[in-house]
Length: 196
Image (cartoon, one colour):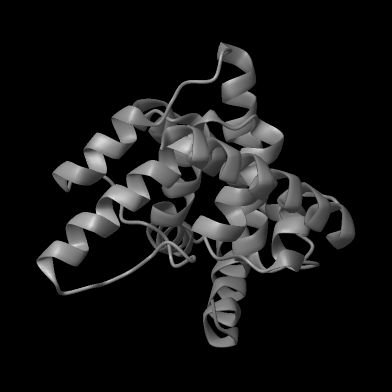
């Protein structure tokens, strides 16, 4: 998200705090797709992800007057949806796989992959099939990871957040995040090797 978008978000937050419901609706429309992708990848369930996003927006609405502008609005919203998704997963235990989400994406009625490293737009049909299989394998392996490994990978690699943004969302230091991501990537590679 660029500086102009962030300034626009800050103005929308200020207007929403003053009671402008249209401003809040604009925030919802702008950020819901990203929030849904994060929720879907953490929970593994389209229906649960929808509930999580709805809960996250309710929480954001209630906390809006307390937003201190110490972080970007988008980073704050990532934190809100991540916390809602983690709470949802903890309530239901055990963790569910992403099979349903993968099939929804293949049918075209699921969200597109984020702007992270897995996003690709090959025009070659054969390349698209191979890429889809690779993406399926990676998402399935990520779904098998424990939450402390899965969440940073989703935010960094699938959503494309910077290390600083992910650290802020997870409320850890950047060195601690780098350590978590390293362990998560090692675990992910092991899972991908098992699938071969």
